[in-house]
Length: 130
Image (tube, rainbow, N blue to C red; front, side, top):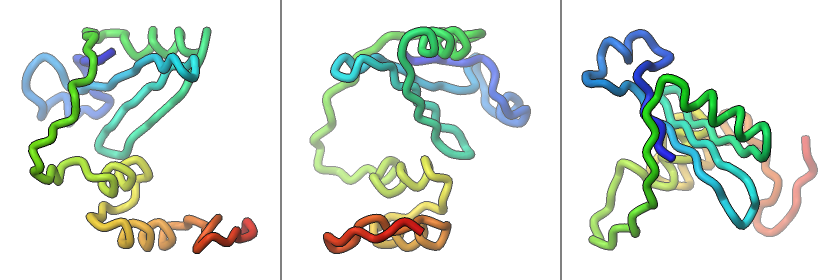
């Protein structure tokens, strides 16, 4: 489900973004795990939540309040061969974690360590938790 919200949490987004909708988020059911995934990317980061049963229903009610909802199956991935720099694995993970963006995995690895990540496994060896 695609949730098109008429208001953003940020006053300046409401002022700056033209048109009826100020934000979009998504949620969907994953049959294999019997749960709902809620995905919300915003300027400050990305939120991914998993819920079942009453908790999922409560989130659906909250997320769809003052919003229009669309249902759409994902399109098949493009195979144009053109590199789309808007959504690389590194930029998506950096945005989700709230760390500065990086184009290369090695750079993201260093930035994560610089921001407090702890090594759990490296070169096949488990490291004790600090």
